[in-house]
Image 1 (spheres, rainbow, N blue to C red):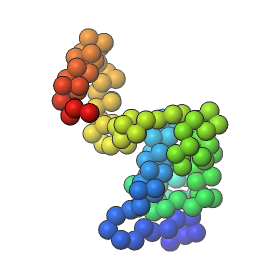
Image 2: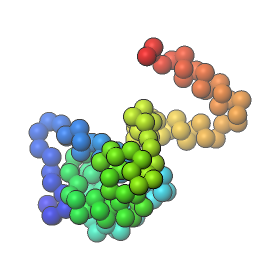
Image 3: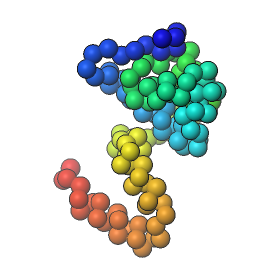
Image 4: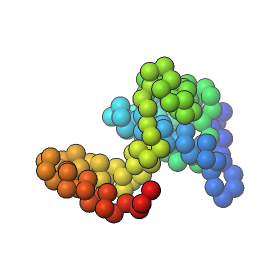
Length: 132
């Protein structure tokens, strides 16, 4: 283990580590950067980036600073400071969608649909969603 990560022990990762990792993944994907390129820019392996994104390893402050710089986001955004320094605001529901494998598949497929089919997909999703 290097000085940039801390292995999370126990059965589950801390919810804060998971949230920070999810935001790293969202920002990386929004920038169109793959895990390998982010890893190279930060001086770690792509497997390490995977662990950060899953919350399996904690991200040190110095590493978060490197990641934030490469992804052109303020560090505070990764910690949940919505709108900090003009950063992108993401609702919890959107964050969940953007960080799940199924959500990413759905978004990619929806992006390719013509408007009429996208509206039909939207109606179907609303019908399938549990009552709030």
